Image 1 (cartoon, rainbow, N blue to C red):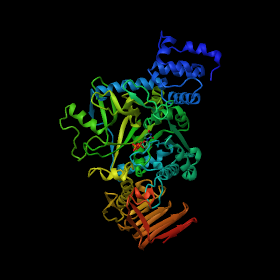
Image 2: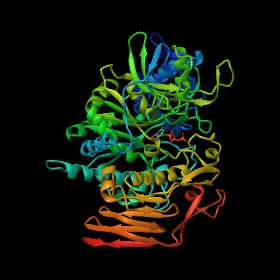
Image 3: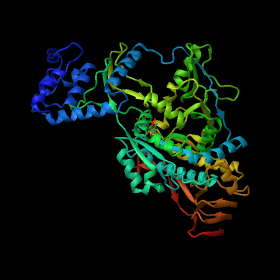
Image 4: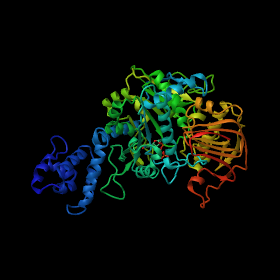
Length: 628
Ligand code: UTP
């Protein structure tokens, strides 16, 4: 706190606007004026900024000096954090909010004047020569990649009590999403280094963006599992700060209803990842270490790494500065479309446009049917799945200009049609996929479309909401996320020649899902389709009620006939040939009641458990060649 002697000078430095006086201060923020003597010079500067930005209400209920002084200090600590964590400071935040709230009130469409068209990109078909080539290029290039996992989200829709990264991605092994991601990155690192011509000491960096809601539990998850095999120095956590909530169209900051010395805050969205990477200095470190690509991904997509190698191969081959992973999308399906927007004034951008904006935009620009399927049966606008690959050097250049600030939006829920009051405090938000909005027209922005079954099965919805999803739309639940992994693995083995029967349809937690054999493998067994093809022959068959876990790198399935459960564990130096007939009672999928409180939350949210009745488990702990 300031020495009393400095107070007069500080008070005279506190003017509300040019030409204003302490009389103004006494009138507009009398309680602040009374407290000036206990504030430091920095705190007075911040107070001045707040008054200049129309925030005098924040001091309206302050007590006399000597009362609540600790709380007043906490107030300024929070203001300092809010000010330093936003590009341009809190004053910019308030001004941006005022402008966006004014646009929102008048109903201004952010895409007014833009004409949507289909951008150019690569549409891949799993397993064909083109796909295989891109995958091989992607694996070669992976040693030059860095991964960024955005994991600061609350996961309110899922309602899981833990962090989403700790949720098992499937129940045969129980491996959580973070384990699966890290093992995939390590497998890519090893495979990429094996292909490198020269020396390779690459350690692919992993950044995890956390928030106050997820940070501590993410650290605990990593530490209690020895970083799932990654070097601790390979992993960096960047914590995003929340942003101030806004009470009205003048962008008056919302005071926490429980504490008059605290501003209410809410998450700002995953777009924060760009400013955090910029301010962390990591991008320059990566540049110096030879990193060329930054891959952004989300917390619960158990299929993503099946799509990464081919998509990275596309980025490399096409020299894309921005490559958005996408899936085939039915016209009007509730998923954003990757769209090229061309403005009447000549501006262009390739960007995600939300489905409820895309259709009207098409209609308003000479396409009376809006967004419609083409001859392929899908919309020509691919569905954005929010996994991005950015070329590092142009990314650094762009962030030097923007400091990582991403175009924001505001989504207030108004009390009535006058749009003057909000139902609850709102805030500005930003999305990582809006990064290309500020890019120059020369930027090479494209997309890579994959089959949904291969690339996208996030876990976002709780069972009750998932069960209400209209028929034909994806559930995006723990149930569908797990079943999608078995389906993808079965389809990949089938494409490699193995006999896999069609699935049966079952209902778990009110959701109708295809149940394929429960087949899982460690990423190091097969990262790309050509790995699978060399490790499985067409004489293999696996029955629908079977389960199989391949937990080893050099495991070869030759003329295996499986009807039951088979687990193969082997060290990397063991080469194991698996053939013949394996038959046992296997593992049974048992439906469970979502409300059965005797079961763990992880089991209840998927609506089934695996009853391990009988199995054949083969363990190869020593180097050598083995067959059974
Ligand atoms: P989601 O759309 O899944 O949102 O975020 P969410 O906030 O996690 O969940 P809901 O909406 O409350 O149900 C997509 C990705 O972005 C991350 C999430 O962790 C997820 O990986 N995210 C989201 C952040 O990192 N920060 C945020 O502020 C919001």
